[in-house]
Length: 141
Image (cartoon, rainbow, N blue to C red; front, side, top):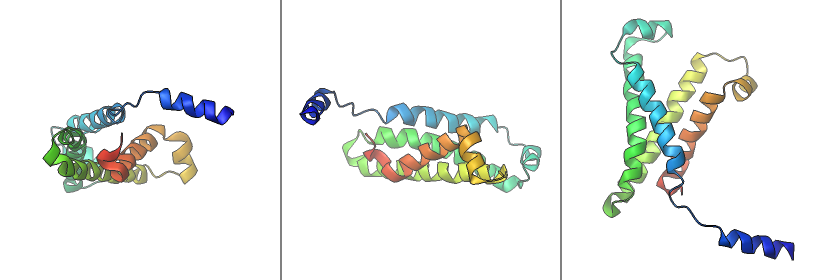
């Protein structure tokens, strides 16, 4: 009886198809901002993190590509023919995000996985956001 009432209420709730943008936009902006903050390229910044200049340059390009790719992947979804391309761009961008954040977590040298989960909230959220789009692509409603 109660189960039927809950089901009726659930069916009356509106379906918001654009909810993925509530995650997509802030996640994209964080990666774009992080990439832009590293411009102009400075090899001393790379050395501060113990990275080579080439890796630092790749990080900058990857952060910008991931952020813009996530935005454009969602935009391509609205154009019928480009739907598949948009899905692939979204998944690729999410994968890049997961790779970048994995590197950030590894470089921070946490004592344990539990330390990352309990104390590194921003990186954990960015990782999960990237993983979400890597796994769901544009099928994320």
